[in-house]
Image (tube, rainbow, N blue to C red; front, side, top):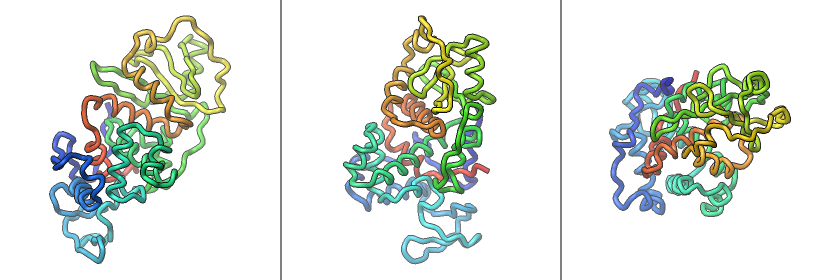
Length: 307
């Protein structure tokens, strides 16, 4: 599988197995903004020493407030500058509360009500969480790229872009691979929605549509191929079949898990689809673990350079 996006050469990311113990547990931090801030700083600089997020130099000067300045490149920054967590106007305790609600799979409307925040604020913060999860996937380099359109959401290290328009010849296709108790969802290079319609019409590859989600019968090593479409696609050419495709026929555990949750994600676009796929992959592969601290560590990691 492809390597992940290149981390900053001086980025010290804490592996999930090495996360520090939290006295009283994760929930104890949520109502204490000072402790929440210290905890997130600990994930940002696990050695205790700040470094420049732009050039990685370790000699920095303290300015007024929380500002810091790099002695080498003169970049002035805040503790969370250049990190996923900097994409969202939330306090440290709000971030941890949001993570807990995200883990519980609450809706955006439930989150905004419980946190007393606007819909747009919650939605942007959730986008940062999903990007942080995707950025730590093995195939992140492929996914944050023009092939999926996710690169258009990033301007430098900020989530300030917007989606590109997609059509049948540009909507990407993803494949589901099962390996024992793990699942991997890959971008299938060279395949677009147009490819699957072509295979369906000319090579009898079985297509199943549920809303804008289209998936196939087994294809080579993949249990299924799938894509999220839009209103520009010719769904009417999809034939009906009496026999279910492989992934439905075998009652695949991940597919049952994913379909239930995909139905809850209202209005998924083909541009944002990989964010939700990688969230589902992450949740399923860590279904027996407590993932709050892993997500917090992912959020505190540097946004990788994609150029």
